[in-house]
Length: 535
Image (cartoon, rainbow, N blue to C red):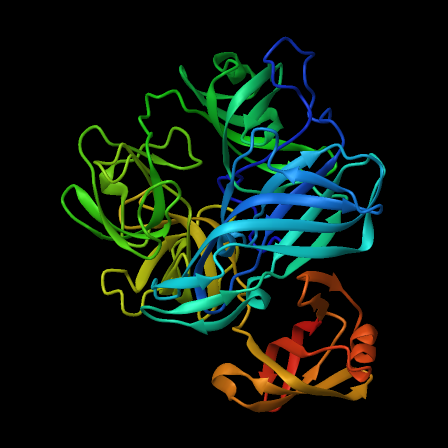
């Protein structure tokens, strides 16, 4: 995964379900923590890139494990306390969801295993799609093996949605088949690695950091001079704010991950002291329309509420409902700050909401005008939900760029991240931007194929190319940037291979089906990825 988004102008980065082995959970006295003293180990993170045709794909991870060179299995997630980890895979673009940080026995590990349940999905119009199977498992080989020597490493698990989804039927009553494909990448360096926010219970406090207990274990959080801490006495900056946080307190941490240090560098820590009142069953989605004291919510993640994904729910609020901008401690919020298109997390539903968090919202569109530190954006989607057919969603918004914003040009296709009405009414405040959106990719899958050229490798593939045609024959061009994997259809194990391996396998009759994705131009498809299935 590449971090597509520019650094946040008001930094907040997202994490959930992070586990670690260091620090201990007793809450007793400890030596002062420096930002580089986390126990060395291997960190595991889940990521993905968006699908062209899906708006949401949620799964609940129930197990992640490693297989070593002797065939023994070592569980990575969950920790001893058990639990599941919900993930909307299509939100993991430019950020990752950390799963675990473990001190592994030295040696070689050859395979990663992942189990999930509760898969749900929507199309780009927000229609709920049935997912079959809703529960399953995926296996992927490390090529080369993951070698653990004691140094910090990051294993990035790319749940490749486009390669995993087939038989997609969009629209009301639609469906898809989910057959997971995992791609693995090992990294050894990098700070500022974008992760999702997380809740946890403070296990231990230090002079300049915390150990935070989460469902699977403990994560070490480093607090620097610029860390904003929202505690019982208000806002403070830097380690002195830790004086108001004791073992047993519930916190929400926003930050980034330092691979070499093996710890989270906190940007903001919010004490969940109960005064904010955000308790009870949760759901997440985008605001469709506003009433006097209630609003319509298109549910994109049900979390622990009973709302079906893809449903529209009326959310009631009253004078006791607490509002907050997620990741911006100290910024006041109220019902008046809500706007159609804004992503929110609601608490205490289906009763009157106890709390509403206004989250950073991703909006895609085309810049139609510039000037005065702002741009006008012709909107195509909010949180991947198309505005077409949703008359309550705005088709044009005014975006305040702020200092340090990237240069945008008229006509540019962009994806922006921010919130409505944070600094001024009627304005979308930018926190991050991607200015080079990838064009929608084409895909073809079929069982009839042959090598027609070796340098560069070109494969003639006949099969279903969706809107391009079915059946259709395309020349698939494999470049140095093409990701090539093969999958055993009996075991589900995915292994990265070279273009030469692919060519040899095709010529030897090893594969039963190929799936290629990339940019089609006439009868040639320049592949970004190819999956070759064998039995």
